[in-house]
Length: 298
Image (cartoon, rainbow, N blue to C red):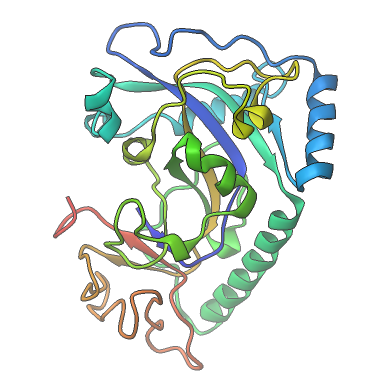
């Protein structure tokens, strides 16, 4: 799970999923019950763009089957033993061993999209400088998610960030912010934005959205209005486009962490800034940090 000072664009896709008990029907009671008419969805999105500057556009499985399948693939964990470890499990939920996509939205946020594309271009330009000086792509990059197109020059990937219903709307409107690093779950790998390539990790940081509440601003934006019906007991994860650029890997935590490749300190000055890439003049800092399993990381 990387810590990113690199560009992050969570305004791409927001899947909502249910947890499934072993060999049983999906948890959450109500099955997903329709996405309304395309006209109603478009009208709601247009009104939202005019009112608050961004819109949540439902991804309908019958209209975009390939995209819906690709999103469902993001909910397949490579390590089912990671499931069932979230703090909410002991409070309400019993054992479960897989996750089921219930609904998803494309986040249409023109201002954030423009900022992200400009930042990706900047990372791509720095990566080209590294290539011209003979610096190769770093090892350990996550594999590109299937079914999506990426900006390869910036090592763009799709990574996940689990969150709660209480925080989701602010994240959609304002973006993930490294200034709040450590508020909810510590900052073992620096003051950055934390994401994961496996949903088994992000599932440990989500909490349930049990039912539709007409007074809740998030629900007004996601559901209702003849568009999407709340499926009951769902959990939210942001599918974030991330420009990883030139990453540094570690198997250590804390301010004294060292790189797996080269052994140099990762945070030589501050816990908020990654080290300069060795041998590059003028100075160019690593774009992202990847925490690899092993060593102090289990």
